[in-house]
Amino acid sequence: MPKTIQITYRVAEDAEALARNAAEFLTAGIEQAIAARDVARIAISGGNTPRRSFEMLADPALPFCARIDWSRLLLFWVDERCVSPESAESNYHMTQEALLAKVPLPAAQVIRMEGELDPAQAASRYESTLRNLFRLEGAEVPCFDLIALGMGDDGHTASLFPGTEALHEWMRLVVANHVPQKNTWRITLTAPVINHARSVFFLIAGQDKAHVLHEVLQGPYHPEKMPSQLIRPESGKLLFLLDRAAAAELPAPNAAGMGTLEGTR
Image 1: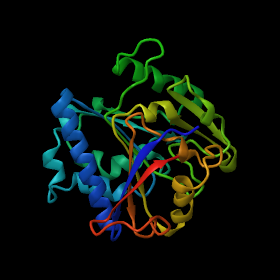
Image 2 (image 1 turned 60 degrees about the vertical axis):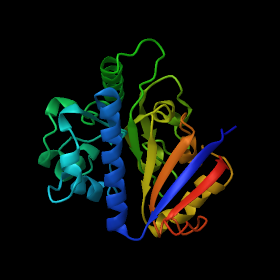
Image 3 (image 1 turned 45 degrees about the horizontal axis):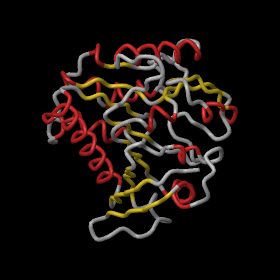
Image 4 (image 1 turned 30 degrees about the vertical axis):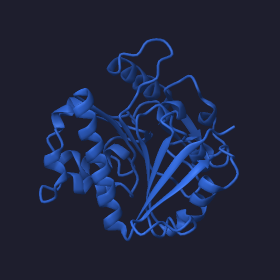
């Protein structure tokens, strides 16, 4: 059965405002982690939606870049396509273009998934890297300071796609997941890792996401069909950053653009 969590959603007027909201949330999360633990460990997603936020983080004319102590940031990925890092399909490649090439983040602190390798090998290597960097023992799970997620129009998040084996993985930290509907393999963090993070948020835009978002948040609990429903952070809190189009089928937000759903999923 799903556990009770508090879902908060913040609705932006347009794509630019949504990107700024995400850039601010990422920046504040990094600042808070460094203040509390002297290092920020965050995992990000790819796709088109976060690109503008990453560009804002790197823009010296905006306030975000100067607020981040890049020397104390470790950057990880939530998932990756099984392609080379130079491929336009690579989540790493998008981040490299939009952010990494423009900010002083040391290369040794950029921990990418090696999508060019055999999928099982890439997953195993990334899990070993997590265990080493987080100094994990036995069945311990890494505790990221912040994880940023997206959501597909089929309800998937990370590379946890409907009906795939990774939805049922509770022991591994990282797996190679075959996605029949796309005839491909993906590398992904598993749901228990995502849920163990100190802070988790979704960044979602577009009218094509409105109905599936409504189903994920207010429909029956059926994570085999809507894998985003697996995301139930142990903190008991989950944030959605949305544009108006994506939020169209949710209860109207208040005058400040905020809405909440209590006791959901």
